[in-house]
Length: 116
Image 1 (cartoon, rainbow, N blue to C red):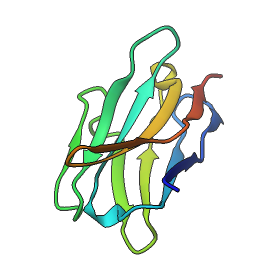
Image 2 (tube, rainbow, N blue to C red):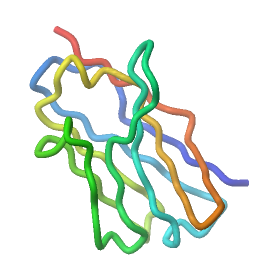
Image 3 (cartoon, one colour):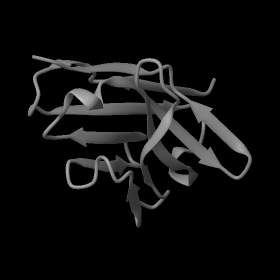
């Protein structure tokens, strides 16, 4: 059974930090390019960050460059998103995504709320 399970979301004050985790099971995680997406309230889902299967390359949305870091541990079948200097506009449901050729898997999402 394929699963992507996100964790680590919550309520944080502006300027704070959170670390999201996404644990994969049921497929060969190391072969998949993985990404974090987010969907702010009332808006479309958007790409936040991507990391290649061997963690050789990363890409970020302009809005999070310099603040967020994506990483992965293929031995633990887990991808992470370290979020620093959080802003209210980072408030969203954050989703984990894994892609390999035509296979495309999504997690259920974790809520991140940045508010004082």
